[in-house]
Length: 173
Image 1 (cartoon, rainbow, N blue to C red):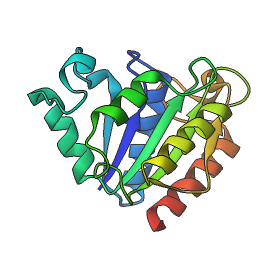
Image 2: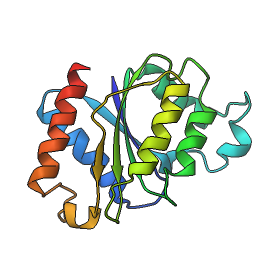
Image 3: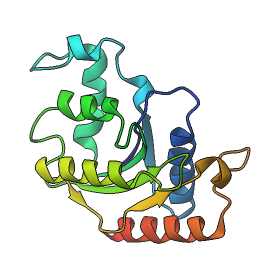
């Protein structure tokens, strides 16, 4: 199973639009996937689900993570890196079995001109530590506001080409 993680808890984010776009395109390729937005983490996750504690709300998320074989992480740039809430998700999940020897594709987005290059690099290091195998083709989408139409579809021809190349490689990864 593929789970696409919209790696921010910001409401109505472009990150979630890109995650939904990936899900729609994978569906057109005949591949089922789930989208999980970090908006749906328990509000008090830092107090209820860290250091071996587990709430009922987070257990549902843990079950989704445990059942997933492949992850696509869509990460916005926050302060030159990836959002801290993504690290909270990783830290709250059971270690090492949640991610160990599973596969991931990484997509960075930003409103600026670099597409979260540093954040994707930083998160790649986290992935390596938890033994999450990363697809070498990592996508960086800069100027995200000019990349999406009103329905949340990518509209720039080169971005569409590269995202489809990444999806095709990820399906076979």
